[in-house]
Length: 376
Image (cartoon, one colour):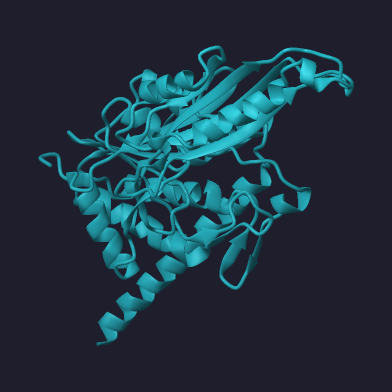
């Protein structure tokens, strides 16, 4: 009994030490205020040196002036990618001074997703001491909040891929296996100019454009649903029109952000929009494919089982309305999910991550990679 008590105390001490290390590291990352290229690169340099000094094999990739950090540990036929982004959205200066209250770490990026990054980094150092029977690659990227093409998108094109990808986005230990696709359009609707005092002599492009938008939103394709989504979303994000008060505007440009469901085809959506007003000029500004990772994927199933062991069966599957860097891997046919610790208010002034969930998150990932073998 004395020996068992001593072992329990040693384990508790180890958990407290590792937990404090994760919290301290996450706080350091928050303080970098990684809202622009210079600050993100400083944070990347810090992460690189931190990992190197703890025995990791590290490479720094630079693309369009932005640095990505790639650390590797372990060997085997299977490769797991742990993906985390270092960039955060802008905020008030006080948000970059992390503080702890009631077992919560507050600060910009604590939940999205520097807490998860810190947990992944600490995990990698532990895997140096206890190598898994697979290869684990930690990819820390600089630009997820602004599209991800210079970070994760670039790394994927360079061949830094694996058999399964975990992006540590904020999910409260749930598993985001589906995500909507992105289709962002500019729709230019023409009218006829006239004097503002005689609007009946012209054709108001703003009013025409708004009628077009109402027709777009009412399309049957935007009323459909799927297993993980009630329906697609259509957001009128931008309107540019008119020059002066005393003129009927002859051109109105609408910026429309469409998030469509897995299984829907963007080219069919475009064709339906074109049919509403064949004279309108439509320009695709950005598009990204949806993520549709299977719930019965062998890696998903294994991680799901372990996550439920640690979370009391709270790790349900769900679909993300927004997009993350999972899409760059999904485009290559690689199963990828969003899975991260517990918190709230990301992108908001009260953003926080629950410190205990960082411990749990690291433990789940560690058990997951150690259960993989070179034979699958």
